[in-house]
Length: 256
Image (cartoon, rainbow, N blue to C red; front, side, top):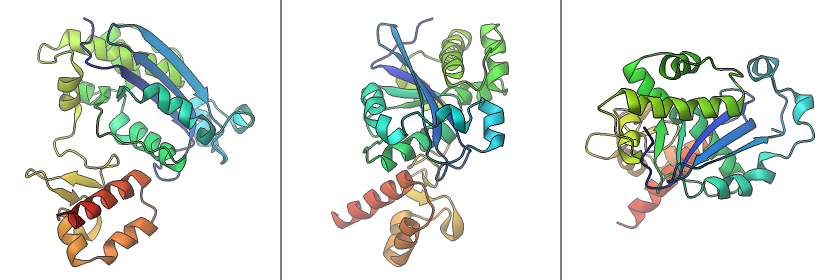
């Protein structure tokens, strides 16, 4: 079954220096852009992260410092990558928890005003975990009856994610192939207001903090009662996209 797309859908995968969204950097990114008519365009960029790649990370994806020393930085590639995906919804494997927040961080560091206001995110892992909890390699074997060759290479993982989503739509009658319903299905039960899950929405649609001493409390209430909390977050080691969302909430309260 083909996906029913109202706009292009960009499947993507990142290989990185580590798993800290606020500090780690991209060393490889692949984007497989699927158009509404089903045509595909795939691009892969190798990236100089500007920081050493830890051995434990190189052991996973096989990319070393020597392999990226002459590659462009993400800041040098940011406009090209953003232009490629700016008209598309986004999809990946475990993308809502890791790839998407880290990609947003890289764009914001490069002064690209990236946000998700007018696009959907579809996390293929969420479908798999709700239906058949497994890893990407096992998901590929389960849904596509294939072995994943080149796992932890950005392009191999990206193409596997695309094939898995199509197979999932074929397998489960309750899944429709359109981006809107797939995005809704793969969202967490308590949706995020930011990308890292630091700020969520409560059942009433109000933003609430999801960490620290104010966990579960309305953001607007805390900012009114404790103005210094905003400054603390802005100056602390939080993801840039979280800071951006918090600023938008603060500015919104000024306009009421």
